[in-house]
Amino acid sequence: MTQPSLPPRDAFHPNRREFTKTLLASALGCALGSSLLNAAPTPWAPRYMLGSSLFGRLPLREVLPAVAACGAEAIDLWPKPHGSQREELDEMGLEKFQQLLAEFGVKVGMTTRYDLGVPKLAPELDVVQALGAKIIVTGTGGPKGLAGPELKAAVAEYAGKIAPMLALAEEKGVTIALENHGNGLLETADSLRYLIEAVPSKALGIALAPYHLEQDPASLAQLVRDLGPRLAVFYAWQHGKGASGAQPKADELLQLPGRGPLDFGPIFQALKAIGFAGVTQIFMHPFPRGIPILETVGECVTEINRARTHIETLLKA
Image (tube, rainbow, N blue to C red):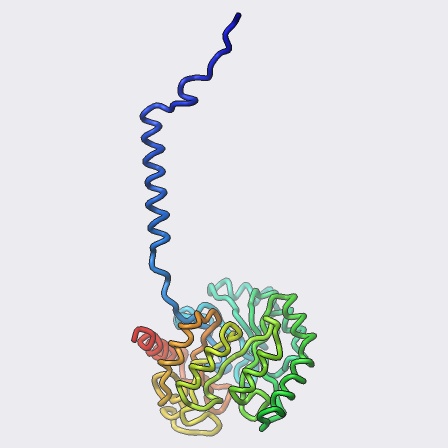
């Protein structure tokens, strides 16, 4: 009877050289896997977004190079009266604008549209989506001066009014971030807490502006913790001596971190504690609106970077 042929010896028993290679590869893989598992996590750091309004109505060709120079990952386009870069986009058209962005290696991360308000945001959602941006900041307007149950009821009513636009934003993968603002519905810390309680949709975020709130580091830090993942934008912006009238430039700059009296340390430690995944804007308003915060682009960049260095120092403490 013919004996069945057996598979080659190496099919079951690799030779010593191949066995050694396999063993070494396995050991190396285990070592690399172990090092990755035991590697220290990347420390939290702010994701900076540069507001075009800091440069007033300077043209995009002058503003876009400042994005990388300020350590920002993208630009936030503002319209008049604070800036004019959003209108410039419309004037040149989406295709030419995207070519300009590519020329400077810049991305758009968000637009700010206080001029529209939530009810009129549908066309802006399309533009933001086309640009690959993720956030639109706007405001609520009145009523103002409410507190307690009356405020909570007004916030709930407003939440119902904006629900259709939030549904559209969710479809398009865009967050509508509402800023707390003086003389409006969202002018207190409690109003922000009521809003995220009334609106479960992740398409609704908060753009937190310390400028418009009590200048108390502990209460601002607690508000950051309370807002948690619903916080979409944080403005590194304090009240200083305000921005509603003419004053010496040195006083106007007191709105920036490290210039005015507000201690941002506890606030940034709270942002770090919640693993804040949104964006941070070093921010202020000049007077009058529509002018750069300092005379030249270079001076603006230097001042923004001074504030950024101050924030980084706080995070190391």
